[in-house]
Amino acid sequence: MAFRFEVLKTDPSGARLGRLETPHGVIETPAFMPVGTAATVKGLSQQALEDLGVQILLANTYHLYLRPGHELIREMGGLHGFMSWPHPILTDSGGYQVFSHAGLRRVTDEGVTFRSHLDGSEHFLSPEKAIEIEIALGADIIMVLDECIEAPADAARARDAAARTLDWARRCRTYFASHGDSARQMLFGIVQGGTHAELRRESAAQLVALDFPGYAIGGLAVGEPHGITCAMTEEAAALLPADRPRYLMGVGKPEQLADYVARGVDMMDCVLPTRSARHGCLFTREGPLLIKNARYARDSRPVDEACGCPVCHRYSRAYLRHLALSNEILGAVLNTQHNVFFYLDLMRRIREAIAAGRLAEFSAKLLDQQAAGRA
Image (cartoon, rainbow, N blue to C red):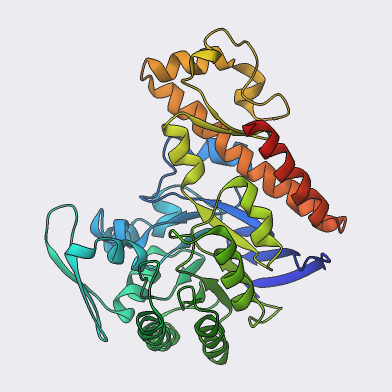
């Protein structure tokens, strides 16, 4: 089998320690995926990603469809060949990016008509077209097209979007069955339903009936309180098959990751570590550190004295502050390297806590450390 998912251990919290085998390598779960929007994780080379221990990264279908185009990428050997990344890749369907440009798109049951944010050209993205693009890109894990909605949204709006997402999931599944290769790519359905528990349960149950090899939970962490995100994740995950991987899309802050894992989530992604790095926000075990602050001008300590990343082994806070204030490219590169390592190391420690059956204890200690650092 090209794909195989196995739950190795379950923590008392409900967290799962697992292993997902793909055609391009093994992913230890729960896993965090750095975001490589345009076939690149901003600020890091593929060699640097490998050195940091990245097992899987995410690329963006919407952006790659518009530039350089999925057919060009297909000609170049798919994303793996094009970006010289021989390890697992996940691509989203482009749905979130299309729906985030509210003034540039029109949604019908057939699909989405939208204008490119690059040149204003008009495009039509149907469920079938989304899968056609993702087949060309060739990622190991691909997503159905879904309708993302604003938060908060009332029950009627959320119900309509969930129903459309379910219909689109059926169409994506049908198209993939005729044109895709299940030995090469794994198609995930996406649970929607806004912040309404009943709709989340309905969406999850209806998608499970379609028998996808994996499931994503979408439309969360878009402005609602963290407690609501956790509650909706728990509602959906409780109905998803125990033997299939679960992916919570677009999360989250370091102190929140263990909360999602405790709800049975196996995979997560977020732009926060890379985006924050470019703005001089570095994550540590004691909370975020804003490197431009004057207090670090003569600080010879590393960013995080408990961190094992190459940046903390070599560079001081004073030097990183100098780079940031001087707008030196190296500053953003080093900040990104540290933040990505921090997230990956945090996930490693979460996996160790699950293996020991002590995730709740680990999570409580993590929150205490973060709170103490902010005090």
